[in-house]
Length: 398
Image (tube, rainbow, N blue to C red; front, side, top):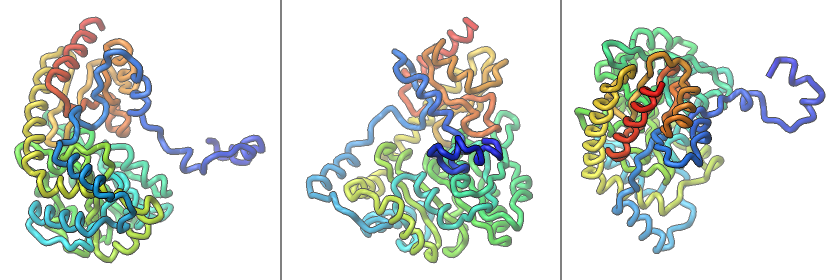
């Protein structure tokens, strides 16, 4: 909207959102998905979820809780049982004790991100984000009136890498918050172990908050977890780890997440949770307890399947002339580009119309992703094979 548009009498008479809300970018993933809904036989690889349902041991726990009548409000930050189970899980994972007072249960991972940003960001604050990244991560600060500075990862020798010096240079004394998602959506880039301490030390020196979006931390290739800041941090560091049950436990539709924060922040987080959603559903939290206490063999199975499917998709794409793909270090996505195609949104729409193939446009994740497409490979191998075949046929026709 032009600067003088808000003074136009006709516009002033119209019921409209505030300018910050109007300025938000609409989801290009959703734009492509809307284009594809109703297309017969379309193969969909644009969303970040498996084509398999949540495992029975998690669903059964939810049904038992429902049968027991667990349909009432709970504590703002989650039931004591779930926070206890989460603390035990994190202790096993990171080799240290996590006080339940540092843990909050949220209605989805994105709510964890939004709640902590509501707690620490004021309008005009400076946020530094490592990009490309899931658009919700960079739009959330802007909803709150903050300004986002993007630091892009680079592609070197066929891999995605972060220039740590470039990131540290961007984190100035007037920076309020650094946002980092690793393993990264959409690229699969994963922060190197030796890059954690220097980044944490720099944020400490300047008093800058660091949010680590760890939703894909268990979906890594070659190890059972991604490098984390939690084992390096003191309990009162300005560090918040946000996470979700969606990916590693195949619970995307359950909408449940968590955050690990300094205990001094928890009282304010509880208030913000109350004023956003009050609390997460009790029966869903019961399912999450089962996920945490019984889920390690299942996570290992998910990870093993992703390793095989990543290899299968990369082999299929590498056999196609004019296609360049980058193998991820973690997550569930491959980034690819097609020779001669620079407008990823236009290409994603054409692939729907001309190949019945649904991929996410790289531009949905910021300008650093332009020219690329994101392919979710957390699906069956026959589906992957058919998707590659459709892309190959489209390329030959083109």
